[in-house]
Image 1 (tube, rainbow over the protein chains, first blue to last red):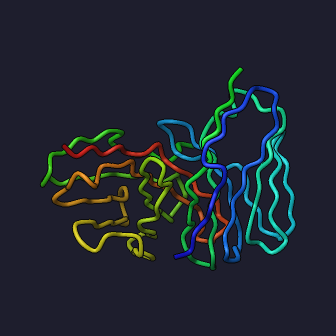
Image 2 (cartoon, rainbow over the protein chains, first blue to last red; image 1 turned 90 degrees about the vertical axis):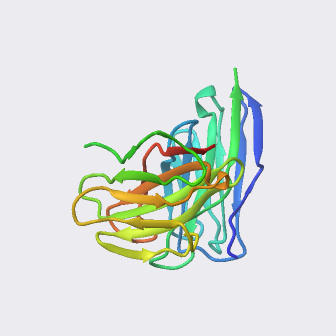
Length: 111
Length: 115
């Protein structure tokens, strides 16, 4: 079974702190996506990374794809309460296959 | 441009009844995916459909579950003779292309409760 492992599972921090969440697999991805999901809603795409070593920035969020395309990280700078949510990584192992999701990291940012 | 629409938002069924979940993809999207989500288990892929065709149903239970995406109308996920273990949030997503790096646009899900 191909798995995407996300860590930590839960993270509770204060407003203004920095944090990093991780997404790892033993297999190589053709691409990887990060989503954010709020309670009662569907996941919303944040970013897609395709190239090994790629770094993408979205305001205070920085996404990195590992050189070997087996892992990815999401770094949030100066977290805000609005960043609270479930962060999911998803990847496809081969072309034409559906996305496989990790279990997610539940982030809680308190003011 | 309306997003992915799922209905109903909440569905309660007694054991043994049938559940029908509907999904209207975004305009112009012909690829539909169904996922099931349980607390602390993440999103589990169920089935991938393109208009009138099932492309990948490797995540669908072999019995009681079926899905369709007709030429006209929404995609339907059908669960026959529901059991308590079917209680979950079911999400539909659509994409413009079936490529692995195509973004998925999710609906807000149908929460099925089996009593």
